[in-house]
Image (cartoon, rainbow, N blue to C red; front, side, top):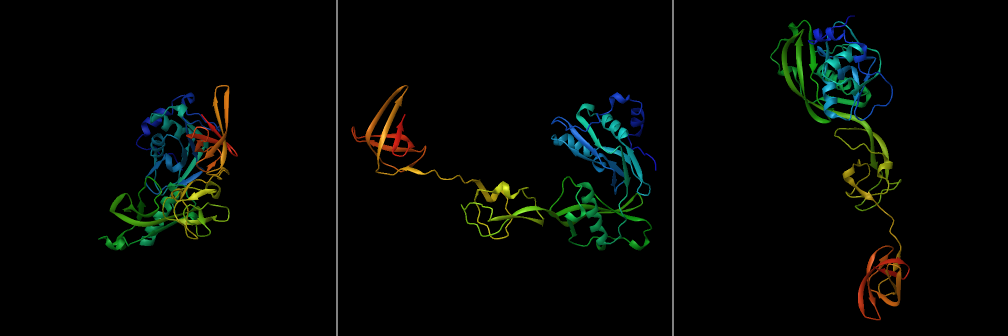
Length: 339
């Protein structure tokens, strides 16, 4: 095993002479919002000829632009026939030479990363499906049991190639910017050694297993979600869904009618239903009017409520002494305060 540098090799070699003081910090403390956390993996698989930082590390960063730049940073050339080991110090120097401030990138994880090629796949449409599956599992750090990938239409039969004459063919599936769900297209390349034989857009159906909240009964619009009306399940889903727990939805009002087994998202629910405050005044009830101004309080004992009111609500009240109609706030049973 040896270390192979990418096209930036000369710069990295020069960078090896940079004093250790210039290396990115290596700490285990929680990073601040202004920092990117780079956690190196102990080992990884790479199907292409280039190793990028996103292949060998999990990167957490609130700055999405910086995170994308770090993920796409090339580290080394890679020959699938020979394993590769990358040291943390070498990776740190490469990051610094790419123009990143050492104070904005914090390393955790392993001191070395072992890079190997994925298990070879057969040159069949099933092999293409397997290669796409391996690429998505690797690129997005998904557990293999949590992902389904299915090729929807044959690819190899559309190629004008004599596949029997190929001596060392391999399949490459190009990276995608985010984990696709549902029907999606990915670029598949057929290689013979380093020579590109064909490149095609292939359509796959992708599903991810995740926790979802489903209705356990029929729910009408404006009904309230209770512990008996929803439950959590693990399902394969083929579209992006809100990451929700049952607790997140408890007490909310249903905005779209639901059938048993329907998956809930935020668009299905409204605000939390608050308990209705008790009615303290009925229309036509006699009430006391209390008028306040500064330290002065005037009470009018004979008045008539013209509307029903709950605690804190504004209602119209008739002053039976002057026959004047005023607006006041319900503050107690049979009591209305007029500003």
